Length: 210
Image (cartoon, rainbow, N blue to C red; front, side):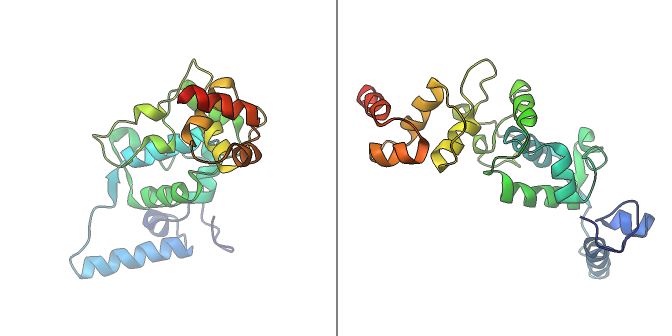
């Protein structure tokens, strides 16, 4: 978010400091770091690969975080279009990458408020956070264990919520089976209390798994 009292039309990075006269703390820090590194001959390119940023945004969409919330909370913008405009060319600003990465680290395992973002992400085949081991590695493919089921009835986000005790309104039969499969050690009564799945159902599934 922009600092109180800063009336620039763009905020948060060195370009905003130079062009838009932004004096928010983040913009001033970026300008200070640039000048210091320039003096010490340690300046590096302000652009980095966009792969990690794009994957993070899509994984956050999968968890219910729409682009406008990511833009506002991470970058102080109304939307992501301006921040990711260069992503199609393979790069984003380092500040953008770092800001999105920070938001991702603190929100990727928390369900966002938008069911529309979740549904759209699934239809588009976006991978959830747990599908990635090293999300910045351009050679990595999302794990098959967490591949989005576009035409199925298993919602990875719903399974994660149930395992954490944040039970969705209703789990499908496939989601119930997956929750039980992923937690084979918790006693049935305790697992039932945490997930809302009936004790009898847990016991039947576990007998079938064995």
